Amino acid sequence: MVAARAGDGAAYEQLLRELDRWLRAYYARRLPYPAAEDARQEALLAIHAKRHTYSASKPFGAWLAAIARYKWIDRLREASRNSELSLHEEIAIEGHEGAAISAAALDQLLGQLKPAQERVIRLVKLNGLSIAHASGATGQSAALVKINIHRGLKKLAALIS
Image (cartoon, helix red, strand yellow):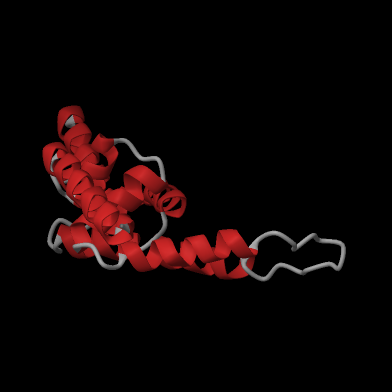
C-alpha cells in the first residue's frame, strides 16, 4: 500500500490482485455468493477511495479488515431490510411444498459430507460458480475442488441409494 500510494503502478496492481483474492475468501465464508460478490466490489472501491487514510505506521491488515467488516455489515443490514416483504393475498402459494421438501432434503444430505466437499458442491453445482472461482473462494486448488466435488457426489449417491 505504501508503494502504491507513492505512485508505483505495478505495486498497486499487485495489491489489488491480493486484496481481491483475500476479499473473495473473506466474504465467501460470510455471505451467499451474489451478496459476497457485491460486498467484495464495494470493499475494493472503498479501499481505493480511502487509501489516503491508511497510515504506514499502523498494521495494514487491521485497516483492511475494518473496511471489509463494515461492508459485510452493510450487506447484512441490506439483506435484513429486503427480507421484510409484504405478502398480498393474490400471491399464489400452491405447489411449493415439493420444492421446499427437496431443498430441506438436499441440505440434510449435503450436511453429511465433509465441509470442504459440501462447500464446493454448493458453490459449483448449486450456485453455478466455475472451478476457478470456487478455488479462489475456498482457497483449495482447482484440482482439489474437482476431487472434492467428485468424492462428495459419489458419497451423495451412496447416501441416496
